[in-house]
Image (cartoon, rainbow, N blue to C red; front, side):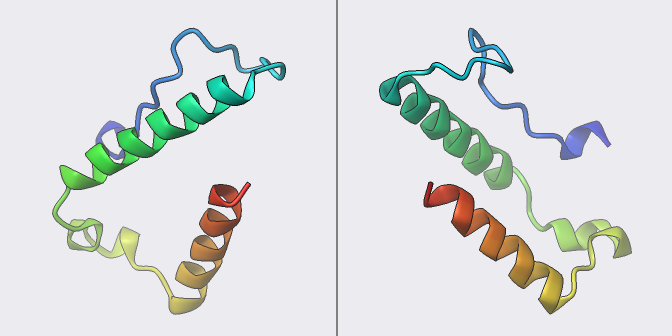
Length: 73
């Protein structure tokens, strides 16, 4: 299970730090995006890991919509 966890570089930020500046927030998001790119770049295909990763087209569509919503904030 641990190999499927992406560690985001949030050092120095509290989980309840709601008073970030725009620059801090942008830096944190950029670092998170890079961490995810690095993580996915190390993987060949999650589908090859077995049936646990089988995703229906509806589930994939919902996940894509949620991700786009987050990225557009």
